[in-house]
Length: 223
Image 1 (cartoon, rainbow, N blue to C red):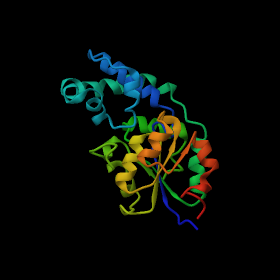
Image 2: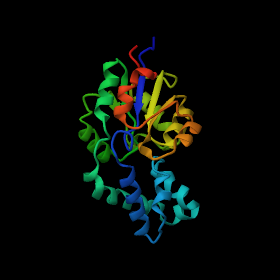
Image 3: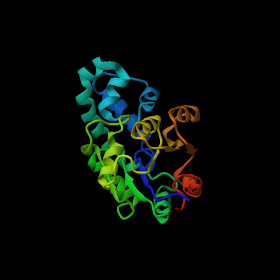
């Protein structure tokens, strides 16, 4: 029998379909500053915190030249696209299934507070989640483990509490590994199965709906 545990869910790209909007927003933000990169390269970094993305994309020089401005313009560009964001198939059903099994649930987002609020409303998730995070809650973003550690703290749980991360990117899996959590991944991040398994993912599913249907095969089964 499994014991009740804590489900820590990434929001962007895992529950709501935002990865390509984020990539396009970063592309437009950087291009407006005279820095143009292929969108596929930006997409490969989505899921990494915005404080790290610019440097990972173009090195320390790019971060020094335009990092702060790029992050400000990214917010503006993403705000223009947020109306196109939709929940991924079965996203709310997954939250309901987790709660039905008696597990606690925290939404671990490093998004801007206004974006997190919009996604909570889109998912109608305020009555399902025990708590949630935003970028204001952490100093170091993914793939650092800080966000997941703060998520546990929000529930008053110790750092070694039984917890499982559900995410969509290699950055989520790396963050979970550093926080001592197993990671289940949905494929909406666009990463290859080999990459996700190499990073340490214990299980892969196409959509939140597929994971919800198979939840009893995971550490989030009925206790």
